[in-house]
Image (cartoon, rainbow, N blue to C red; front, side, top):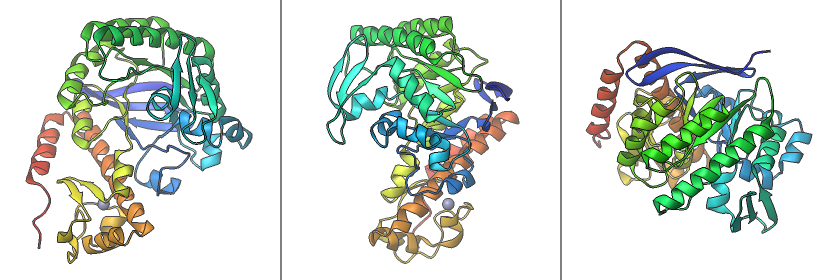
Amino acid sequence: MTKFSFTRNATDGAARTGVIDTPRGQIRTPAFMPVGTAATVKAMMPESVAATGADILLGNTYHLMLRPTAERIAGLGGLHTFMNWDKPILTDSGGFQVMSLASLRKLTEEGVRFASHIDGSKHMLTPERSMEIQKLLGSDIVMCFDECPALPATEAEVAASMRLSMRWAQRSRDAFGDRPGHALFGIQQGGVTRELRAESAEKLKEIGFDGYAVGGLAVGEGQEAMFGVLDYACDMLPEDKPRYLMGVGKPDDIVGAVERGIDMMDCVLPSRSGRTGQAWTRRGQVNIKNARHADDPRPLDEACSCPACSNYSRAYLHHVFRSQEMISGMLLTWHNLHYYQELMAGLRAAISEGRLAAFVADFHALRAQGDIEPL
Ligand SMILES: [Zn+2]
């Protein structure tokens, strides 16, 4: 049986490219993980998600534990069978969404007690329960249960929260146990304070994990502050394990994170924007609901080989969005996920050929031109 392992094939500056091997297949890094919140990447069939080039999906513990419940999914053969996705799945711990979605939260050393945002039912999430749920789901990459301080927070609050998360990281490790072929990732916290990030990294390395996430970023601190943290945070984590930046991001966030040594990312942005008429292209963001597209027979991006760009005009995409037809979200989501995966493939090739700086310069130059001129 294949074990979980990470191989770095090439580096260019701080950036790395390689492969994560899992019993369910390989994950080429740097990797972008589409988000399949409720056991579906919204508006996409699983085979279509795979066709965009995704090697791995993210599932949300918080949503799945409430509906249809982890026990029900386990009884139906696990999340891969349930949602018809046989490649790797990473699940988050539920911690972040408990803090952002649930009500009546009560945080203690033990865990978080909360009321469901769906029906008000009461639940408790602890490191042990989060490990149990992620095991029931059959997740390939399991995330430690951690606490995300509500912002704005003082440095003392961030420090206390980070230390609680490190105690929970140890409990997560103990509860996870020995599961060959499955991985457990630790999550570095510490906000934007270098000393706290260092303390967190040391604690996680002492416990020992299969991969390390940089947590607590992309929560409104801005790109400059995020890159400022990544400039030193990546170096604090083991070189020979995957590094995962949670919840990122826009295409230029992704490029900047990869330049700084990040191997994995996830974000709802490409799928969510696809449902609100926003497309991401090599030349930046396109708002398909804009009237300028109504008579435009050209594709969204003539260089894109996705179904939306190969077979449909901007005028059609504009029409189906304005008419609130379901195919609108389907086509734009497909295009956006395809664009993100092409970007990752481009980054991987550039790193392995030692030309990342030129690739990044071209990326920014094309975006600076903006969308094609209206007809
Ligand atoms: Zn396209």
